[in-house]
Length: 112
Image 1 (cartoon, one colour):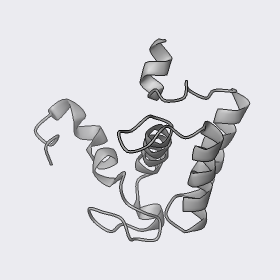
Image 2: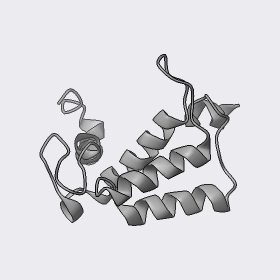
Image 3: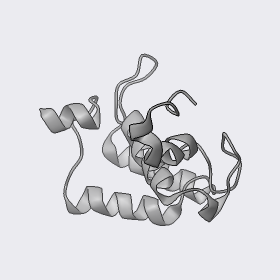
Image 4: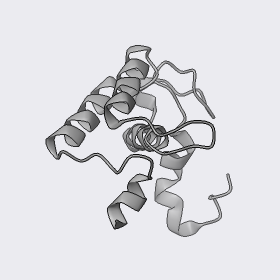
């Protein structure tokens, strides 16, 4: 892992390492399943996917926030994402009426 030598990141290394795991065990790098995936990694995974979906890419335009949330729901239904975290994430998005400017990253929207 390229981050391992950075002592200041030691506490979040499991989050970085496991944010591509899937609830059904089909993810990587370790094939963790369900609650074996650290909660912070499951949260980061959902934020990362949402950000990727709502940001312009060379191969496609940004999805509308509602479409991105629908994709997250679909992936939770398929057993890949933690459904309870997806639900909480969508509630936060809707309750706060926070949807980033379409086509820009969440970070860029924060500083705009």
